[in-house]
Length: 296
Length: 258
Ligand SMILES: Cc1cc2nc3c(=O)[nH]c(=O)nc-3n(C[C@H](O)[C@H](O)[C@H](O)COP(=O)(O)OP(=O)(O)OC[C@H]3O[C@@H](n4cnc5c(N)ncnc54)[C@H](O)[C@@H]3O)c2cc1C
Image (cartoon, rainbow over all chains, first blue to last red; front, top):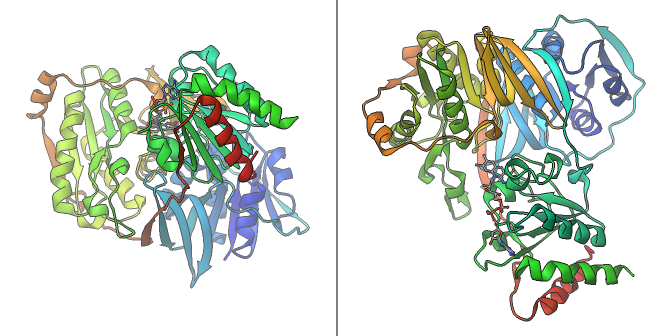
């Protein structure tokens, strides 16, 4: 099968290479660099934020490819839906496994708040986004042939401004140890305990949705869950988090889940390897001290 | 301003039924997709003296039972303040891919008219977020996704788009399709009076034939498998906080994660 990678990164290029022949579309220099090593790279000069430009480029190339593969991002979900309708093609997001069989694509994705996987057999042409961390191979390195392309933007909207988001400077998806905080913390200042514990353990601080979205005690890069970041640390330590399904959906790939909650009936204990029933205000200071001692 | 709101009767995933290792879709109840309530709230704020209506497409079997269930859910949307609802129910849409869903929605919009289409960024059951872009493509209208703020001024929709690392200000000429996030507003809870009034508002049922659309399946479902969560579920509940902390750290060291 022939695949075209849009928003090229290593995982998407690798996923494409497992299907056969592949090419990448790059808008702007950063993507041109990311696509290096792909046998063919279509180079579009223009604003990487211009979704209409990308859509036009893909629609122009689509006839030559069976499948379009992108990383899972808000922008790829936006253009993916739009292009799929124009191509009369299926659009399958957050794919966790992928192979070609008898001219069709066999894919799996999580559904129902990550409580089940769906296995699907899709006709080509098809458009896919792949979940992070599921296609971790090395794409073969070819000498790249660059083809210049100058499409007309389909113009979905006009960009009147861009502001970077406040950031806590974490890349929570990449953290090996996450100390995650929920509404069990009563005041913003109390989160200092979680940062101290994370520091003692050599980890990062994550949080449930209310902490980032409603209370705004932490920036959104800390937010874990269905609508936040999906994480896969060695250790996920949930403190004062009840364990609602939308939170759990983001932590399923953790190796060990531990939880501290003062309610013995908190649902989080159903999803944890180790659960401690205790007031976080009593136990976290002790854990900070003991974890720091362990390090010595 | 006339507004169409996409309201999905979604599977209530918090009540997902699993029997003998199988997901039983037919017995899992439906609910209004949570984020759709934010789209409804935004529509009520923006509609002015014009009307705002719901469009729902049924995707989950069994059709007959679901029609009644969806109608009850649509009463909730009407009680929040929408003026009427269109429910597209057809065997051809059950298990179809979203291309047919988008065609059905676009057909209702072409029939009833709209200056603005509001939808949720995604639905809780499948979480793909593809229907709003598909509807925009089908209608040939501008599209703004992931709006966390929205206003309409001088015939334009102006929104803050909530992306991973940045917030974009986007402007699009109406008519347009806009998908919203949960952060955009706080959906209202209808009063008893509004709930009673909603009983009299129209819920119009349509089939694919009414809309002149033929179903067509490009993705075949091989099956659903429940994700079995195998966690050790060791509970530490006895002893002083000091002792509990020791136990926890001991376990975590045994696992080799600290
Ligand atoms: C469409 C949708 C998407 C969503 N996406 C996400 C998402 O991505 N991420 C997410 O997290 N949520 C998400 N949610 C929200 C989710 O449903 C829950 O509301 C949220 O996860 C609850 O956060 P919490 O556990 O911090 O708070 P709560 O549910 O209020 O839990 C607080 C917990 O702290 C415990 N506690 C209180 N005091 C103490 C103490 N002194 N010591 C120890 N424990 C204590 C309590 O027993 C309780 O279990 C989403 C919801 C919807 C509808």
